[in-house]
Amino acid sequence: MEILVVGGTGLIGKDVSRKLADAGHQVIIGSPSKGINIVTGEGLAEALVGTNIVIDLSNSPSPDDETALNFFRAAGKNLVMYEKEASVKHHLVLSIVGTDRVAYIGYLQAKKEQEDNIKNSGIPYTIIRSTQFHEHITTLIAVQGKETEVNISTVDYQPIAAIDVVELVVKLALEEPKNGTIEIAGPERAPMTDFVQRYLNHKGDSKVLISNNDNKYMFFDISKDLLVPLGEFRAGLITFDDWLRAN
Image 1: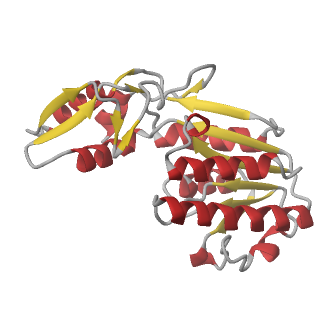
Image 2: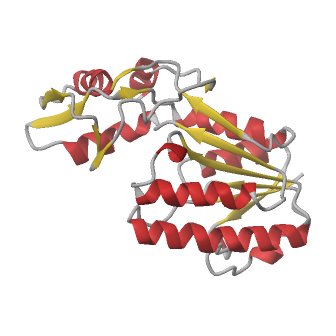
């Protein structure tokens, strides 16, 4: 089966592409470095000839509101236009848990537009909304930390290992389109402070964790449950402690 993996050189994309190729599928890596640019449309029509499935793992070059909105709008328009011409049978997009619950975070607005674009396209689709990855913990500490301390909220947190995301993306892409949204998350839910403290302990990092109830994530004020599924979800298998031991 021919499959276009948009964002096929990224954290999730490179392993999705490898697993599909190992399973015998013909994989086309969709990235500017491979001559396929979803924003300009360059190489997209040619890449989609004979393609059955499109896995959209693309990401804006910046989380800045305007940059993200412009990226996903342009990319979405091109993907839908060329996929219709190629009669693509399944479009899967990787999105974020909580995308539909906030209107004031520009990046999530952009992701919502990405979702709505494919929902309204008439192309059979599956949307996967994921929680943050285990691997994101280092960014969290870097952004919210200082030299000797890190300020972390007690908001609910349920991270998932990137390898679990890869497994679920591959599995769902090869199934029939759901024409709906599936949420995925890690196997363990706890306050964000719990995960950060465990990471600091494991790494022998002397930063002092300063806990607060401000319901903040990175630069944003959020609801306490924004980062976790509110209903049914598919759980990854790798616990945070399992991931720590492997890293």
